[in-house]
Amino acid sequence: MKLNSVSIRNILSIRYNPTEKPQLSPVTSKNFNETQTDPSGLKTKTLLKNALKNKLKTSNEPIAVSLSSGIDSTLCLSLLREIFPDRELIGICGVFENGFDESKQASKIAKKFNAKFKTVKMPSIYQTMPKLISITKKPKWNTYTHIIAKEAKKYSDIYVAGDGADEVFGGYTFRYSKFLDLCKPKSSWKTKVKNYLECHNRDWVTDQKLIFGKNISFEWNDVFNYFKPYFSNNLHPLQQVMLADFNGKLLYDFIPTSKSICNYYHLNGISPFVNNSVIKFGLSLNLNEKYDEKIQKGKLILRKIASQMNTKHIDEKRGFSPELWFDWKQNGKKIFEKYIFDKDCKIIQKGLINSKWISKSFETIENDGSVRYLTRLTSILALEVWYRTFISKEMNVDEKLK
Image (cartoon, rainbow, N blue to C red; front, side, top):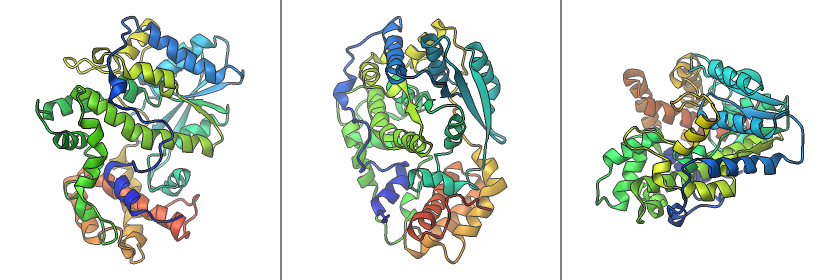
């Protein structure tokens, strides 16, 4: 494996590398022509059911479902039960120590749809970082859901999750409202890109350029240009955001990460929301069937289907997310100090990362409790672990950091 300075720069700035070849075809502004409407939700429901049927028709083995208490996974489970009244379904929910516990609500959802239910304790992302990174072979730590997949493998070779629902049906409401507040009627494409990135400001910091050492070149304009096609068109500003979301984190982060996890555990990973027919139909739905600006609710069509199926779910967006501050205080801080403040820190020796920025940012976390700098330092640690695992090969992927 070789160092790719552009990839490192991008992963540490927007969390993914858009210069890679995506596993799913990108979409264009034409895909958002509002040619479809589905007031009853029946067309969408039928497409989702067909997406599941077509992937599962050749087998009668149990189906494992990644089950939080949110609408995406809940809808997957309810549709599966409607399609397969007698098939064994297993809902699996992950719980992080000191994090939001979705398992109580998820267990009720599983019971309602006659599915078995399993809860798994999610370990520290800091202690298990070599394993997280080994799955994608990239300096990324958002592969902690591999624990859900690992548990799923105990019961089935089929693993269903809700990837893509937010991007196709408009689920990032916390970003949409902020973007609209920042957006002006005649904003240039570059201003819109800056506003869009401000809505993802945990992926970068205000002194981003200072992160990098002498061997990585960083200019914001290089990053802005990745997003130019998504904001230099005649779409509604929210549709531009949805275009950028689909062609960004979904294509280059979430889908490849999920694919890597499923490949790692030899699972047949399925999400009905990234079926080609579902994508084509969902993206072309009227904007007002996805998002209500007044009440700031998204995925309206999916909510309608869930309501018709009497499927209860939590309203706010959660998912399986670590309680990062707790994990940092319990584990991450001492691990970071051990590997990054060590005289043999590889990423500083090789001129990839600026040691002065690290020291200053570490103080910022200690004094100001900045979550933005915490996520950046977590990614810096991931880069060091990646380097020691795949470049210098001095770290074992199953090693538990202490």
